[in-house]
Amino acid sequence: MRPLKSKSFIYMIQTRLRGMGVALITPFKEDGSVDYEALLRLVDYQLQNGTDFLCVLGTTAETPTLSKEEKEKVKRTVIDRVNGRIPILLGVGSNSTQAVVDSVKNDDMTGVDALLVVVPYYNKPSQEGIYQHYKAVAEATELPIVLYNVPGRTGVNMTAETTLRLARDFENIVAIKEASGNIGQMDEIIKNKPEGFDVISGDDGITFPLITLGAVGVISVLGNAFPAEFSKMNRLALEGNYAEALTIHHQFTEIINLLFADGNPAGAKAMLNIMGMCENKLRLPLVPAREATCDKLRAAWEALK
Image 1 (cartoon, rainbow, N blue to C red):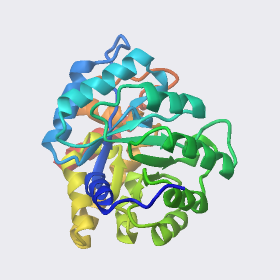
Image 2: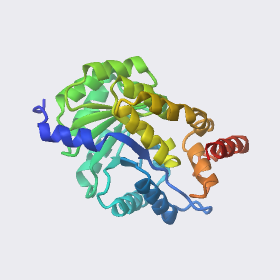
Image 3: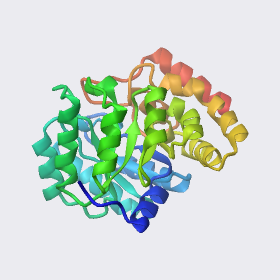
């Protein structure tokens, strides 16, 4: 069991991974190659519109379809462009514990502020297996770790009990991105978490209610297209200005539903394409959003103007 976190360490993490983080897409050209020019445009768009931190190489980035070389270049492109202006949360998840341990030990982590580590997927470990996975990763790095619970993708839910056990036992496990959709479970974590451990929403649609319960923000898909508006909603909610925050929340409920109607990041890429930010191109097995969804997204965007 690790010693308790220092107050300075707690303060640094709590202030830097708060508000709206954006789960960056990976833009592709029509030929399927990574569009690094579009990626730079997207990073600049985030920096100019109030995004609090960036999540690189997460689920929304179509990371499983990227080669090792592409992952490294995407990571380095974003880090170099950001140049320390906002924190970088790097996705390093795998269903092989050893692969994650090797990555955090051997990869170049210059410019990375924290690691996002998903619950192992497909092989469906027990709660003890999940605990041991994170224990091995936490002991392999001094970087702060954000747990990522998304049972709809992994096939297994990390319980509140396991989350709290990890939060108490490891100094560098500092937060969880909670995307279970179970508000009761999230509230149990918020209610019983130790000092210096935060809950971050993993779903745009429940970010507002989760902040009212004590969450500190979101890792957002919506923020790819609407960083100024959604970061404002987060700031207002965190300041306790719930009436204004709720107004913005309600403005985007339809768009949030449309973004996920044909899977993620199909909706986000369709919206960004409508806005002229990148091509509407995904890598198989993912395919672009249906034309009907694109038409609805276009209409919703026009209504916001």
